[in-house]
Length: 179
Image 1 (cartoon, rainbow, N blue to C red):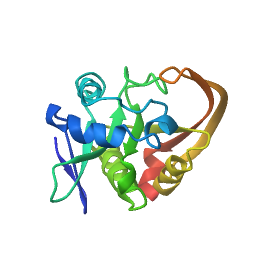
Image 2: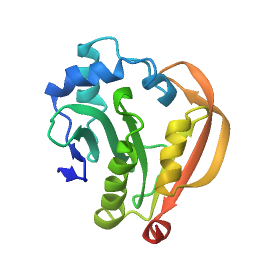
Image 3: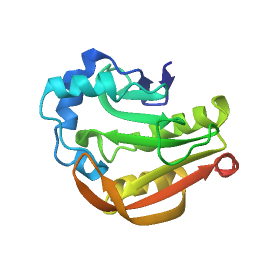
């Protein structure tokens, strides 16, 4: 599956993306705010492609005119998220390489996935969250129309061996249709 927006191509991750993934995922400003440590090697990035970026709705984000992966966006379906156990609900997850921040790429990529989730996959609700302090992620969710649901003061972040404040938001199909 390939999804296209005005400026982006969303496509399946490939093993050949390991070097570009490492370039952006090794940045200390990217992973830790989202709950994962910076990548330490191209081999680690390749392992992430093989074991983490395998979801049915996980896409590499590429600028049009370039096949280079600069980030990821995913609808985590039932069985791959802890936000819901329903088959007609899922979780939106995303990250973007720092050189591409501030261009509106993430809301653009996420809108394509929201459209796919609601129109093609039959989702009734899509959940999304962020950790306290991740203002960029919070802002993306606001731009997309997500509504606040709850916060939790003791969210375990196992990949970093930390506990953080987590905020959970949601967007129903009915809300999305009005945007």
